[in-house]
Length: 335
Image (cartoon, rainbow, N blue to C red; front, side, top):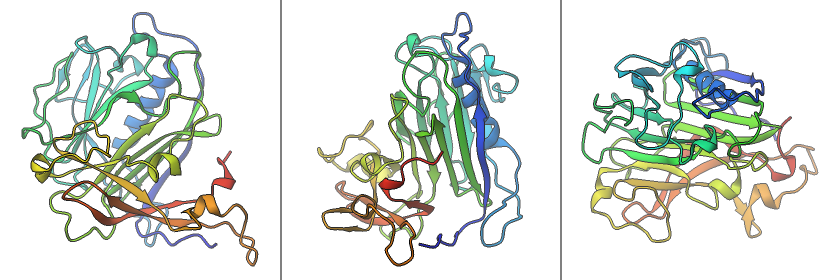
């Protein structure tokens, strides 16, 4: 089918490569390739830019900004990830390491994301991180051993807890990556996809929902940093996002709502998870049921991605995603 018309204007930052390097820096146990990948994403998030696709491209991008950070030696309100990959230090809990707080006013006035380079074991070589979201922002109480706390008690969502972020399997030899980023002029959408050996290992989403339900109170957003402990498993799949609720949002009223035992969450006290929905027939999503092209046009199908929740107090269809679509499984991964 014909490609859908874009709703928003995007800067497309595509096919960026990170070459494999098997060298491990002494004393850090983090492969250079993972540190190069994370630093490249950091640099791209905060860079100035101009949209190049969309209904009316050509306007400036609302870039992310860094409000505070740690390079493992200094923790303050500066961007300490600003010189080299040696600013990015992975370590285990309680030990000096790096973290960085990014702000995107397009999502909310004080909307912030903290990327914390924590890992469960230093033998994991930077394959794990912790990511926490706060719609109201973070205090400036972070140290070289601990990330900052949210400005309002419980005003945060931990969307990744010392887990894989798209950098492939733990340890092992260095690996090459290709990464892609899409940012909108209004700052309401940021997508990141990370590839290794033609497999999409990581999907990052920081976005407002399209056509949100009138029942969705407070700051409306969906976020994920999804990866796999593998060099071949694909992150943005039906299994990961249609069969499982892997998009996160924050609701203040979640504090008084009992958690649904059928939904696994990291912190049930204030977060809600959502499913990505798809058009279905014959017992499954169209992307799995359709295994060939359209007999008339010879084209493959794409379909809109909706948002749905089954958590108590928030059950229902909650909106859809901007300018991102399901494809057919038969197509596999783009080379």
